[in-house]
Amino acid sequence: MKLYYFPASPNTRKAHAVALHLDVPLDLRFIDIQKGEQHSPEFLSLNPTGRTPVLQDGEVVLWESTAIMYYLASRTPNSLWPKQETIRADILRWQSWHLAHWYQPCQTMQFENFVKRLLNLGEPDPQVLQGATEAFHREAAVLNQHLEGRKFLVDNALTLADFSVASSLTYAIPGQFPLEGYPHIRAWSDRMDQLPAWQQTLPKG
Image (cartoon, rainbow, N blue to C red; front, side, top):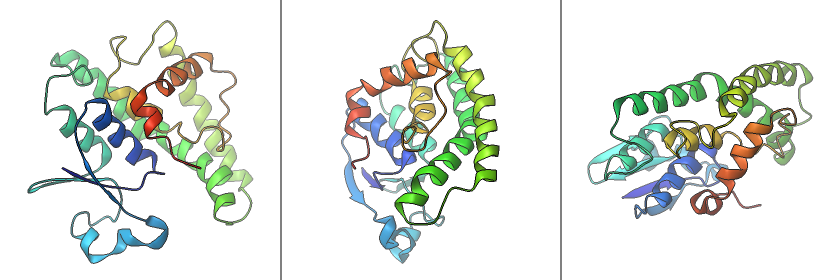
């Protein structure tokens, strides 16, 4: 299997980390987004949206990291994607919440506080940051309350849900995420940081 990836991307990170955790061998193909390689005809033939990651397994081509995670975890029995329907539904619930509510404020703060400075795109927009911060606090309160007394998001065991939700915290420090008032999120994030697969996919630099 080939994984076309940009390692600095949180979306790439969660898919790559799941493969590492499950010992699924991958042929990694680096796509240099900073050089525009995602817009090449070859890459667009795999993913017309021009985004990473993309998984190619023979004639199967998948884009969107959540779909890739499901595909990887469905290859063999494992605890990340258990057979019980109720647990799978709960995993999907948290992944849906992540995509609909958690990802956007995290991504916005990451861009305003970190990416702009990195790429010399100017100062953070205070109005944009205010909206993102308010949304972050609304969702962080829900996540923090859920994690009280739990080690992981679903069934008190590591699942795909944890990889999805934690991926948006990849740049929490340079993105200046206001996590001080959320001890259960920070404790859970620290547990994720101890996973070898999570450590191996931490963006360099």
